[in-house]
Length: 410
Ligand code: IZC
Ligand code: ZN
Image 1 (spheres, rainbow, N blue to C red):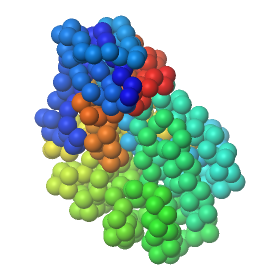
Image 2 (cartoon, rainbow, N blue to C red):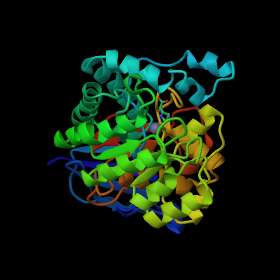
Image 3 (cartoon, rainbow, N blue to C red):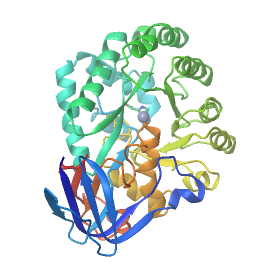
């Protein structure tokens, strides 16, 4: 048994509960002044405030220096396993090409598919392990990761095995999502229906048989997969026991958010172009909005209507969308800045959006996402006196020390 004490916490700020927070609950955070956290065997044993110190002896004492402590951040949407990079797309963008133009011309995702197919398991593992180290340094202690750059059996399974190995060997908790329907591979050019049939009949059941993913996701978008194909794929996933996610209304609203609500998807991602009826369907279906503001920034798009979503009772989460095309940054703190400045969410609403709400959308809400007795001691000691400072400063890394399951990892 190992007991650790974190003392001298200026403010301990956290949402509470193991469920997705919506409406007025989105901004409900507890704030304890002059607090301590006692940790036993990686779990929170006690929280005290107003200068009281937990009793008993400790193997390790950490002085938080009067600073802010929050739950470890949860990045609920990443494409962190990929071969190569796509820096050459900068020149194409400067020449006027947009995201879908590049994809339609056989680049974009398909470029990353070529490079990912060429990469070995070990190459992908080493590269993404370094990304996870960088994420930890930014204060992220749990994340989700998608396949979707293999687009055939061998390479999708290779990607998912990398994701699962990372989750086992790296301090980060990693939730695995199968995203075989990320693009139509060249072998199936102009045969999107047949590709979806192959996914449903061959690959998805194989992923389920091998227990390689908890979630299934599809890119429902103009020139990628339409709403009918998305329905077929997600209904099959649901029948196989996967929880559902969907990239919806990123560039065009073609029915993805309605489908998410109707099928009771755990989350719908992006939602930049969402319309009123899509939001109503999501509120009805209890679907979390997984918003990706750094992608809006990088693509020069507008920002998803996060305030309206909170008002309509949709749980809002904010993630990085780290990927080699539309968001080559894994700095979730920048997404926090944009959450306040562009979504007009309050710091408290944003904290919920990067902790408990994405934790629930990754199936880990009972383990992490809040600082409460019984949960994993996943937390950040910030180089900041309060969370407003984290929302206000941008471009610097304000995470000071990062703890995962009771161990200091940064
Ligand atoms: O590689 O472009 N939007 N998928 C959907 C992406 C962005 C990732 C990529
Ligand atoms: Zn994505």
